[in-house]
Length: 216
Image (cartoon, rainbow, N blue to C red; front, side, top):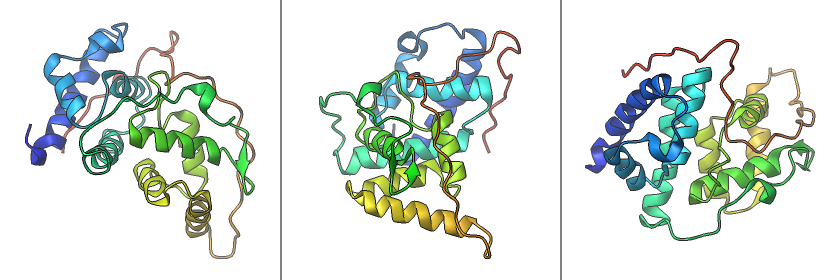
C-alpha cells in the first residue's frame, strides 16, 4: 500500500474488523484478520494481536475512539519507519512481569514508571501480546494527569530518550495547563495494580456495545 494511503486502509481495516468482531467475538487474534489486513499491519510495524486488542476494546466498550486508535498507530508507524527503518528486529518482548508495579511512583506521580515503560515498548514494537498500551488503567492515568493524548505521550517518550525527568516535567506541565488558574495541579492517588490482561473481557450480562464505526 502506498505511504499516502495507509491511514485510509487502516481505517477501513478497523471498520471491517469491528463488524467482524460483533459477528465472531470468539475468534482468536491470530486467525481474526485477513491476509491482506495482516500485510497492512506488518507494514506499519503492528502485529495482529496488537491490533485485535484495540478492535476488541472499541467493539465492546466504545473506547478508545477510532481516531485515537489511528493516532496511536501513526506514532508507532512513524517510529517504525524512521528510528527502526522499517525493521522490527527480534528484541525480547516486554511482559507484565517486566513492568514496574502499578503503585510505583516517580517524584510523587504514581503509575508513571509503568506507563513510561509501556509507551517505550509500544514504540519499539516489543509490548507483549497480552498487554495493551492505552488500556483502562492507562486511560485513567492520562485523563487524570493533564488529559494527555496517548499518541502525544508516545511522542514524549520517544523524544525523552529514557530521561524520566523530562517525562515528569511534561506531565506536570500538562497538569498545570489543565488546572484552573487558581488551583495547583493535584497528584492522583496510587492506582490499584492492574491484572495482566490486554483488554476488558466482554460482559455476559450487558453484551457487546453495538457500535458503528463511521469514517469521516
